[in-house]
Image (cartoon, one colour):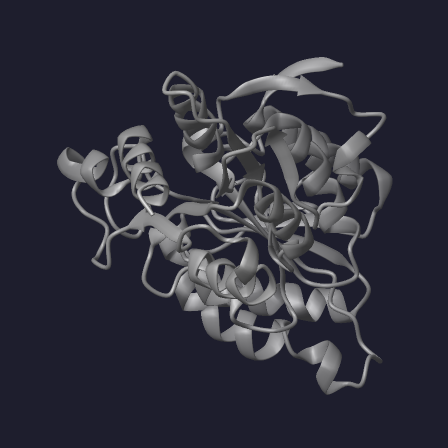
Length: 326
């Protein structure tokens, strides 16, 4: 076991991928000499050269389009989108080409492209730098989407995404880049399947589902609820597409209540899909409606008021109170 931050864990995962396969290369704005805005790729260009850690032009459409061509020629490109809101110039390439080409060719062509996107708020920035657009991509078939909440998952998800034959988007919670934890670089353990959800806290009275940056908040809310005599089970969803509904359903059948929280707006968010599926699959086990706690349906606000926009412990606890009021 080695203690490292999420940022360092991703860096190590990228280093292992570059060292293990000459066909793996990195592309992105300022990822080379600078090491990325968050220094996640620090030192990799010096170690592997400018041909394999490429400082690209400021053109997300070009980054994604080039990666598709490289993948068709047998490479495994890893693209970094500098900020979440910058991905939209490349949205067309991702959703109409990258996601669909495998099916369009009846499986003859695979596109093992990894897209790394720092996402979420809490860094004192503004719109285009603090957004959570995961639901827009989850709606498109042909893309796999994962998001780590701890360094161990960050390391293994990075490696697993690059090794996957399908296109994978890794949403990296930027405000958690400096969160420290233990990483076993030899054994993934329970992280062997990146598309499975994990129960990170056992409970009996309600199920609280979170992913990415809100997992620590969900755990803190569960700890606070315990002081009021409520036992809250917390699930780290980990994979946004596909979603491990089986783990969520099993928990709800035990607890009888379900809350889902994410930073993205509640309207049209991943929480709505989870609420609908669990209502279909475990309706008779629910003692209250499924409650969602998310961002508001508005453009991301200015830094001075972002703490009112982002779900926090108090908003989750208030939602728990409503769930127990039925």
